[in-house]
Length: 304
Image (cartoon, rainbow, N blue to C red):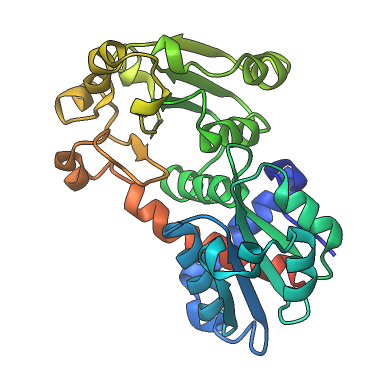
């Protein structure tokens, strides 16, 4: 039995196979519409989510399966003090596979050690969000036709953004990748990511606080939110917040085939005027998330 707790649980070959299956689902939806007849997915969301939870539920339904679960901890027996391990053992009696989001880092790993059915980590605190990373990889592959030979700009909160850390970890395994890390000093990428992933694997990267400095070199621009609550003083936040708002003017030097991504929710870091630009891929990214989760469910349930 396989679980997915961290993106590195999957080999490059397995990721490539998932992308291949997801692309086949996009082309041949009817072929997959009964693959999970009689199967049940439990979505255990101990903290709020819009895209991830609904994406998992839509994925299972489009495979012909059913969904049970809860969308907040207060509507489960956790509110009465039940442990995660006991919840998982119980829900495993009713379902074939579990997607779980939890505010505590490591909770899905603990759950996987007690579960009798496969566990998918749908986000654990600031730790991992492997299905968002798979979504990002499918988006890049569909929009650029490859996962090699890319210059990727990551912009905004690079310190606390789990999606950024996971994407760097995943892309570090592909050939000829270069990163441009765009953030204020206060929200720079953590040292361990630089040392353990980028430098250890000899992956070239540059750090800048200027969004436009390398814009003309980027194949991918991955935007994230600069969060007010991360700053020590209001003055620094006010100084930097508009620096990282992507608008048409900042895209003037960008490549014609730039792919603009965002894990969403967006607040104001991408101006709505960019939504109509053909390079904006963030709503396509949402749809790709459903297809890659369909492929993942099939893999973990060992459905051919």
